[in-house]
Amino acid sequence: MPETNVATRQPTSLPAERLLQQLEWRVIKRLDGLLQGDYRTLLRGTGIDLADLREYQLHDDVRHIDWNVTARVGTPHVRVFTEDREMTAWFLLDLSPSVDFGPPGKTKRDQLTGFVAVLARLLTRHGNRVGAVMHGQSERDRVLPARSGRAHVLQLMHMLQPPTKVNAAEPAGATQLHLLLNRAQNSLRRRPAVFVVSDFMSAPGWERPLAQLAQRHDVVAVRLLDPLELELPNIGLILMRDPETGEQLHVDTRNSNFRRRYARLAAEREAQLRENLARAGTDTLELATGDDLLDSMMRFMSLRGLRSKHQARITTRSPQHVNHARS
Image (spheres, rainbow, N blue to C red):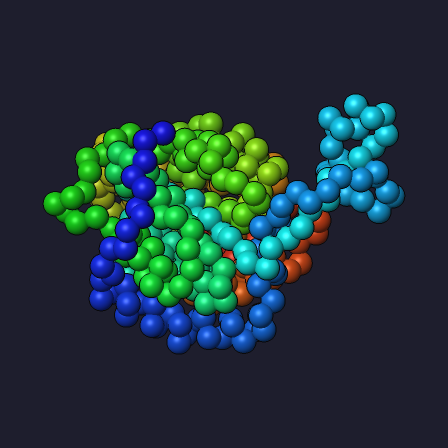
């Protein structure tokens, strides 16, 4: 897959600086106090190196059995790992045109930027590293190598800003999320935490790569959505445009039969998407355009703290939050 490797520091914009200052005051400071330095609640299984091999014991995790060695010597052997003090997190970010949907200042991209900025700053301020791969905004994926520090977070936020109308690319068809996931599976080393942030409005084929990535890494799927994607309000004749393909269609939302069909199809897609995410074995956080970022981060901390070892969980908002349509 072609890429653009961003290895040099780019000037950060004032909007990114102001946004980070606001997030540091309203969200990060409060979360920092709640975590009290326990950042392994957010990232599990990171920075692991193979240290030794020894015979299997009853308390060992069967996932650490080295089957090649076991077959060669005739007795079960497990791999023993050591864990670094510093942790690394990678953000796999879907920046395709559909993430720009939503009310001004509360689009899916805005929620993505806020979530990534808060989590990245929480981690980097304590010496941990974060990196990012940005997919769908240009012909080439952009890569920000994993580093630490506030300036690094600002650089990441600057790269997440929407393209200007001059630089905006023409719709290129459905998002190919599987390309991003396959790329990560082939390139990520050791065992970083991986955050896949997307609305998952993609061409089919991303489910298996996501499951394979989750088998090797600690993966969290952050699913972006807007209430209007689930239920249309009665607002008369409107022009609907597919941001991925550019296709346009006039629809009359006063037609109750049309609204019911829309809601039914959306509910079917919603159920299938949740089933696919659960089957992949990832933790899943749903982040809607109307959600308060602090509340969302609290849900995320709860998800990471309460998840059982063998069962993936999906956190959702209250039904009225999901079904609420903007006026």
